[in-house]
Image (cartoon, rainbow, N blue to C red; front, side, top):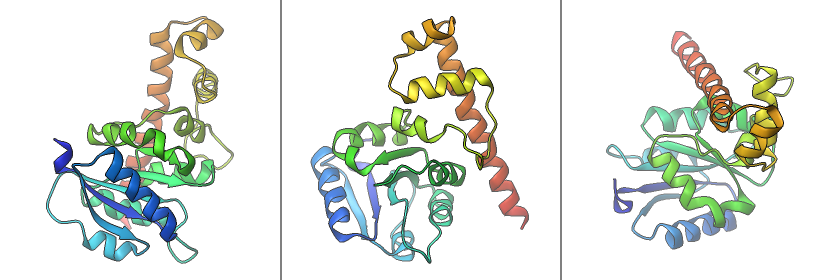
Length: 203
């Protein structure tokens, strides 16, 4: 899939933020197009036509009357790949978004530096494993998953920006084992997301 096939939805209730996100898309991925830019989830969903190449940048807080997770689920059901963007680092909100199907978290302060890599990960159907994203997956009392002690230690150190090799030395394991622990963590979130999706279908 080339960049010219990419179609963006930018959903944010702050006009200035919308324009800033759009400017970054146009600058970093100039061949792509923006199908919707604004605060209305229904209009954004209605803008999705055809298959493939759809990426949504969704604000974590769309207003009190809008459930961001429900919006993400609706996008994912239409084949849209979703990155959550936020000015605030709230693990529970990011974890809820991951359960709904989001595969990346980008702090708004980082969007100019990491948008292109985020889009590449989404285009390939994988999670964008940045320290910022992984730090949001560290379990809290309300987390949907339970990690082993080794998974938690590896996740916390990687999230703090420590290279795999350093984490491996600290834990007395190989770098491949560190990757395995991170993949195990992501797999648990994938399983939790699948369970949540099946429960939605039953209701």
